[in-house]
Image 1 (cartoon, rainbow, N blue to C red):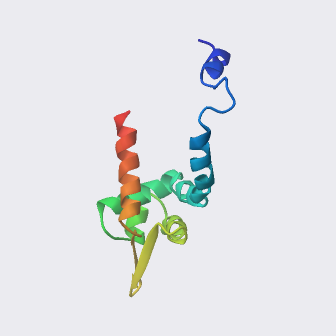
Image 2 (cartoon, one colour):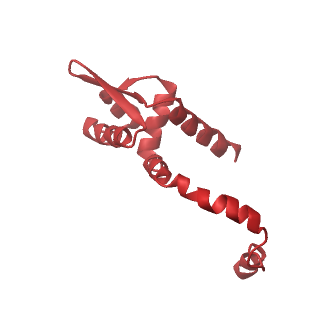
Image 3 (cartoon, rainbow, N blue to C red):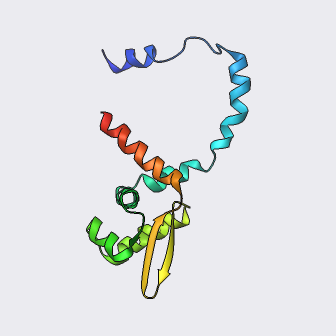
Length: 121
């Protein structure tokens, strides 16, 4: 099957099928505004690895995160700060150490579900 036929088969040949559904759903799709930033933050392989590591351990220090992902402390810190700024991670200081954890159970679930989905193949 060539690509052109697939495009035609995947498209509707009518303008509107169920106007009631459209009227119900269309005003609500704006509710997802800003959510794409969450997925953008997790779309980076390094940040996703960090978030995954934080699902395996409740809390990790920056230097341990760097060792886990095979980067410098500065790189790990940069990615952790971005996750924190996006509301996906939180941190606490203890002396000279900085420890990060996921912001809440929702972030844990997002990462876990994405991993399960990708393994289903």
